[in-house]
Image 1: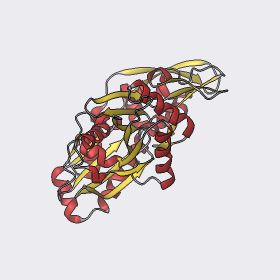
Image 2: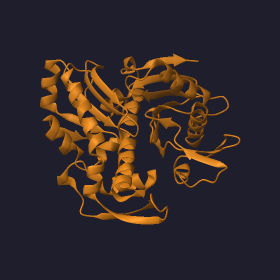
Image 3: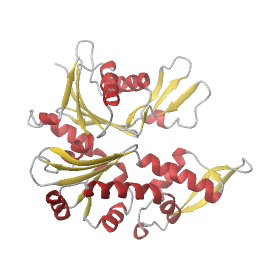
Length: 336
């Protein structure tokens, strides 16, 4: 019998759930390939350590961008490698896979995800919308008549959804999330300090100093090392939490706008439910200090952060897998 897997195939990280075993893999969605042959050199954590450091013969990169597949062949090879790492595939045993997709992606983008997983060796593929999986993962009762709201801030997309009776009533999917915050930090450092830093440095500064609200600012400082944009020399600059908060202000405003726009298109009866129960944040972006305070101040609704925000989507897929079919109506299934 083939195994049943759940995959949260994210822009920044991939999580795999195996029926009966739980989440067995948490790894960066990064690959390193040989430029000439396009064969994999490394995947996951080992590939992430190569970002920005590879020789001319190799390339380390993320094969997904803004929640969708940017390089089909490499993505299929990466998923196959993840299947092998988790011992999920064998000569006469192919897994059934449930994979999440951002809400509102095109049919072409959906088909690309399905085809990549089939190419990796899956027997069948079922799709579930990411906001629903996240809501189930954090424990929201999506099947009832009472409205609930989830905001999942990932690496490439932010998914905002209001749910009731097992479906999405109102939603926004914006391609502004963790990566956009990193890009904003890079641009701020270039304009403010005349220093060019890499993606890894920007992410480090975000994790160490990042805050969305002045009340959450850290008193610590960090030395950002990079290249002077005028001289080309290696330099370092002292960066504060206030610097990072200023840098990411605009993309955070776009996320808040998406939340407000979703509420504005929500039926009044469900809106009153959300004002009573609050908004739940999940995804890696939920770990940004003060983001709950910012959203609460701007929207006027109580905001809670999921207990394990990074695991929320994969945990939701796991609950669907272990539900013995009771949540099967949430899936969009295709066999091959």
